[in-house]
Image 1 (cartoon, rainbow, N blue to C red):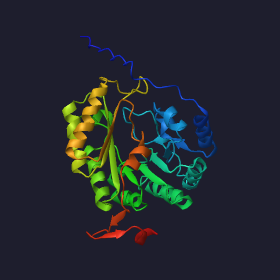
Image 2: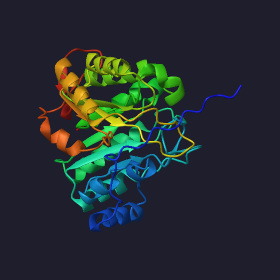
Image 3: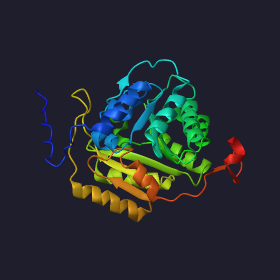
Image 4: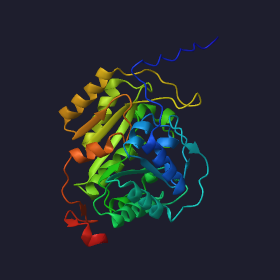
Length: 313
């Protein structure tokens, strides 16, 4: 018997991006090299790199460029990471200051080799940026820390403006798409983060086109809302190479509008959906759309809320 090989769906004409170029793009690229920094824009081969970098927006990737996990959709290198770079927060803060940014997105590879998952470096980056300019809004896109909730608290206590953790896909597909992750653990992370700091914006996102059904994705949106998520991003999965998972289908532009409408109907504060939407796409615009009161942290073991300034200055 010969297994049937299905042809890959044809890439739609409307799914095209410009080749990255421009003065601001080159400036940011040079700065990344000068400060020995990484960006998920480059490592994950983001299709929006030209648009975002020319607008002066980049998602910094900390904790090295080698991930301990092997997700079927991701272009980031998998392997054994190097030692932690304790000066990385300082260099990152210097780059933010040099660019004059007022909104910064920080993400990382998974560091399952570390008990804390690198949470202290996330916190250090947030604090270093704020020391230079207290007005900078910092969004973090964090891993699940393998359920080490003390690590999550370390990040939350550093007062990010937005805390993002992606569920990536429907739970039925996790074994194929995210074999070292657990859907319920990702939901639990969002729920716990919101409980720690109820006024902090929480965010998550998922891809479409990996073989899920639309009903499964609507259930994911309900699960996120139920666990305290404020913002959801939805974008088309694009295969980084032939070694990665195939694209099962391309969603039409009108289908993204359905996700936006559904998110509004169930009470999500914002849904950013479109073929090229990624976790940090237009993050600075969305962040400014949603006013936020001064962040307060729920004290451990108490339902009382106390100002973060009283806990970590």
